[in-house]
Image (cartoon, rainbow, N blue to C red; front, top):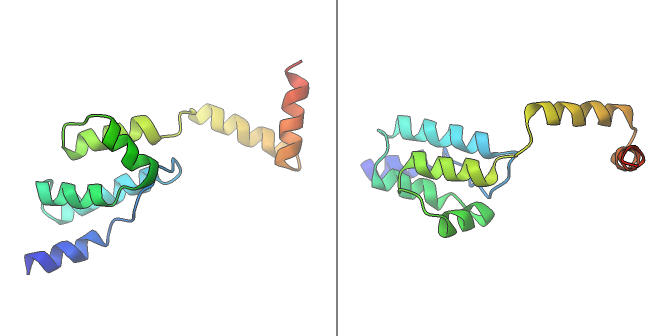
Length: 114
């Protein structure tokens, strides 16, 4: 019975490939999974790590972590999170609203840099 519960709970977590746009959803899903499944233990952590693919998996392989969810989460945030601040993103959105296409935005920024 416990094994089938693990399989069902594992379905709560989608794979994560290092995309900065989906990192917070992945973290939220993992934390929900940990809460429902009785917290962090080696089997749960192994299940979570099995959901990590692509660039994110490479980061786990190359960079040391303590083997806990908090250390894995910290590493993913350090390596995969969008480094731009909220202010930078808001500025980009405002600039994009002024231009009809992304190409216009890029062209406008070239003109401003000279």
